[in-house]
Structure formats: structure tokens, C-alpha cells
Length: 141
Image 1 (cartoon, rainbow, N blue to C red):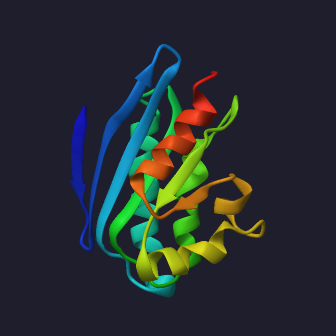
Image 2: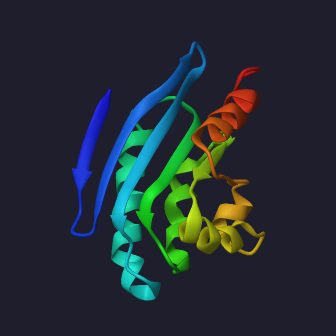
């Protein structure tokens, strides 16, 4: 399944990346401009709402957040993208794929003082490394 959604600044999409008998790895793609600082809060809220709607329709065993086409410079509200991954079973494994200034800006948010870090989200600069990481975590589930 592939689906699109557009906000004022961003385009959102998702699809099932990899499926096993135990569930699916869902690939979210965010493209466009994420407003800096607190101006990005409404955008983060839209992203979180979109992710929440999608993950409730799947048995997610992993999530890829593809930010390769996202222009992001700062603002910690983006950390909320992992909120929908907290379930009664625990935290669904996730990773972020980003390069350049977006990766540099996201990296500090992976620390233990931010939701991304608390959720165990990892940053990769290539899609192949990210999907390999998630498959290695989920292959035994």
C-alpha cells in the first residue's frame, strides 16, 4: 500500500517496505521544508498525526523515517515522530535516514534527553544501512 498526504510545507507518504508473518516495516517519507524552531511545531504535529493513523492500521515491527528530501535545520518537536511507536508491547524499532545539514541537525536529538534517543531511534546516512539495521532487529521476531 502506498499513500500520500500533503501539508502546507511538507509532502508525506508511506508504504510497506518489508513484510513477514510477524508484521511489516513501514517506510515514511517526508519531503519539503520543515519550519525552524517553534515554527515547526504545527508541522511536527501533522507528521505525528499522520504516523499515528498509519501505524494503527499495520502490525509494525519497524519504522523507517526517510528524511533525505527534508530541509530541516532545528526544532525538537520533530522528536515526537516516535510517540506513535510506543505500544503496550514496547517501543517499535525505528531509524532515520538523512544526509547533510538535516542529518547534522537531527543527530543531537538522538541523545537520551530527547524522545528520539529514548525510543532508541538510530540515524543512518544511507537507506540500505537503515533497512539492514531494522531487518536485523526484526528477523527473529
